[in-house]
Image 1 (spheres, one colour):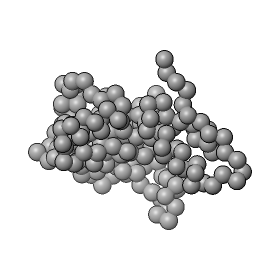
Image 2 (cartoon, rainbow, N blue to C red):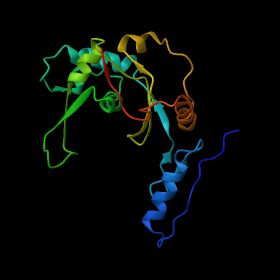
Image 3 (cartoon, rainbow, N blue to C red):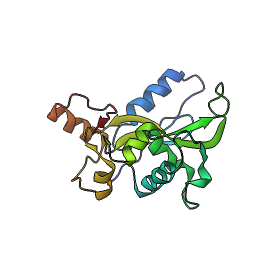
Image 4 (spheres, rainbow, N blue to C red):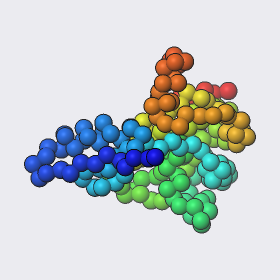
Length: 185
């Protein structure tokens, strides 16, 4: 039976460092935790590229390499723009920032990167999935695959939790475990 995520009720005198340490300590557990400041459910989740991401990459690939294209031109109407975060973490796409001094001033325009072009044409292998919390990548799997291999879903059982992933990697003594890797073909 699943347990409720850990929680903490801060006092006005609770130092920020204590709040941060609580979240950092509890978020990687199986049940996660609630943020004592904003109340968000902090839970580590596994993400991988899906059919929607492949469609987005294929559409962006059709544009010239330097072209910045508004997301409405390549994302399906039913897909949320948050679907762009996963290929962004892989470094397959990049967003044009209007004001470089203010990274939150976004144009809504995106472009495919050189790595993205290599991936679409099956000239490189990338991690099959990664573990993330609140748009922050914590761990990359060491299973590298091409776009074609990902689409064929030829992989067997994968880790169900970040802890299981870390134990599997340590038992295999993988040299670059947890880090983003690219293998060009």
